[in-house]
Length: 286
Image (cartoon, rainbow, N blue to C red):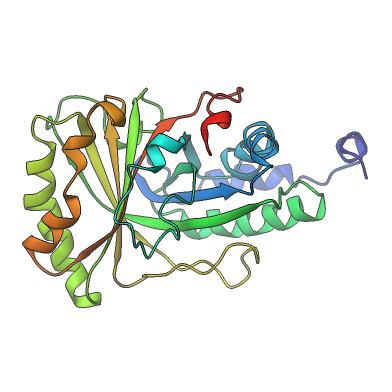
């Protein structure tokens, strides 16, 4: 069935259910959950992947879904990929894998409802031939919000603004604790000591900290189950400057974590925002 045929076919949308659903449950603005997905398009398919994601999937497979209220895409050109560390990463093999990053906020308390919809819609997209197969999910996980640390206190954008504010760059940092009991202690070290110290006088306005949640058993088969459920923390540093101009500030995050107590940095990766509706940077990925 073509797209025109699908759109013209009679649809049972259950429109009456929406009024009832809107009357129940939380509907705040806090990013209680996130989808963070780092993907590598297969060589030779970079332009096709970018157009599919921007023209269709970003909207039909993400932003049109209930309770996913903000999103942004980021890209790592080859020079940005080469800044990543550590060389031996438990997240990306090789460490340069995953040149596109998409980040989305999900309303606090609405994770279960969103997951029901996202599994259902992605199955439908697959049946309708609207899934680009020439890609690899390097690091894809739904995550629960644990903390946000701000450089300037109450001044400036809040975390719920972060994906709409025109930040010039983002650094993805993934940290593993030695075990489940150590993760809480690692989070407290980050929140109270390490992050405030790094943020002071830096080009980063805030850092959001998340912990991954397991994907449902009926997820899409091309997305592997999340690793590090009990031990991992994911940090997003939102930058007011291009990461290439201030990368010295982000060197040594692995050593700082190791010296402060148990824990290992598995990835530090800089990105810049894509320009929606264009293929800018696609020719600079390899």
